[in-house]
Structure formats: structure tokens, C-alpha cells
Length: 108
Image 1 (cartoon, rainbow, N blue to C red):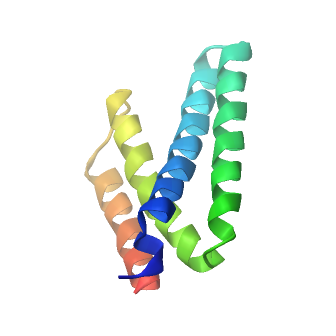
Image 2: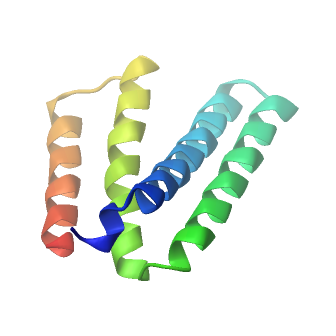
Image 3: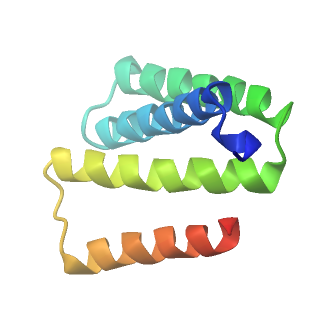
């Protein structure tokens, strides 16, 4: 089994991706609702993502970590956008599929 798929590393990849998702949610909220809440969400999300990614980089190479985070983050953000009710058409779905296909190609 590839070292990147160990439970600890997968947990850190998940934590990093969710941190970036949290920051993205804060940015989406800040675009429509001014205040400290959205800024706090952005700050906490980025801080969590950075801490988890630093821990990942202690035991994995940057290209492997980056590809895994980007793949999961793409899926999470697209799901979040759909959940928020953003328009999500065929063009977006194909674009996301192309991003994931490119990530799979680089990761192979």
C-alpha cells in the first residue's frame, strides 16, 4: 500500500481539505454578509489547513500531498457549491471531471 494512504496521512489530507473548504465557505459568506463571522471562518479554515498540511509535509513529498488535497478539495467545494444552490450545469461538471482526470494522471 502506498504510504500516502495510511490512516494518519489520509486524516491529515481530509483535515487540510476541510480547512480549505471552511475558508471557501467563509469567503462565499463574506461576499454577501459583511462582518467578523465570515472573516473568522476564513481565518480558522486557513489556519487549520496550514497546520494539517505542515504535518503532512513532514512525512510526504509535496507533489503527492498537493495532488491528494486538490482532488479532495475539488470534490468538496463542488459539493458545497451545489448544496449552497449555486448553478451547477454540465459545463461545471465536465470542468470538475477534467480537473480530477488531470489530477489522476499526475498522481499515476
